[in-house]
Length: 214
Image 1 (cartoon, one colour):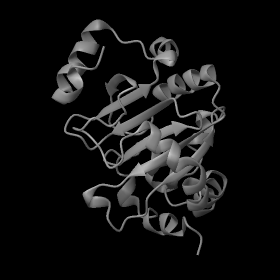
Image 2 (cartoon, rainbow, N blue to C red):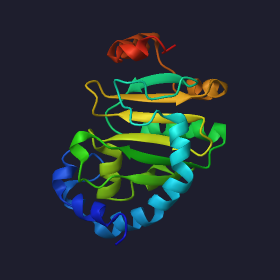
Image 3 (cartoon, one colour):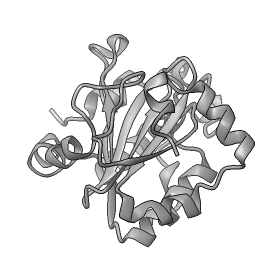
Image 4 (cartoon, rainbow, N blue to C red):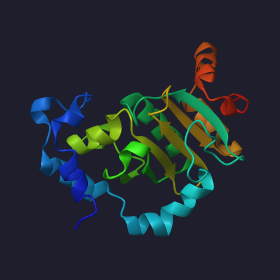
């Protein structure tokens, strides 16, 4: 059995597409496109455990999600409004930052939640130079991955010096970007926030974060 077979079956139902702005209802369920996408970008369990899991654990504190602090203490943090894994604009902002820091690939690991028990979980690996058009080319699979508003994800690269946590199911959906101090310039350059917006987001953060967001 291929690791992503359950994804192809489980998400084929358009019930999952009610939220989607990428795929219209008549176009939902193109299994050929969905399978081709997963064949190209699925991260196998073997590669995840042998290569990526240790990197993830060096960035994120194991088993944590909001409202807990999820990054190790050496990471600085930027908080942004969330709601889904990626929209085109914030994907391109992150992409520019990753190109500046020299990443070649980034991975997306779904964070298990109480309601996800028994559901197929995403593990994906993408080249940093991927286009947005290619990111959304997987029909219902890319729509669920990118747009579903309650799944939560860890995003990180091979260098282990930055990460992004999409807390879409938190009471106030947030994206928390963490990075080592030497990378602060690159992320602050591409995720500039007006002071008013920054203060509004600070008020939405758990108390544990309000003292460490600069």
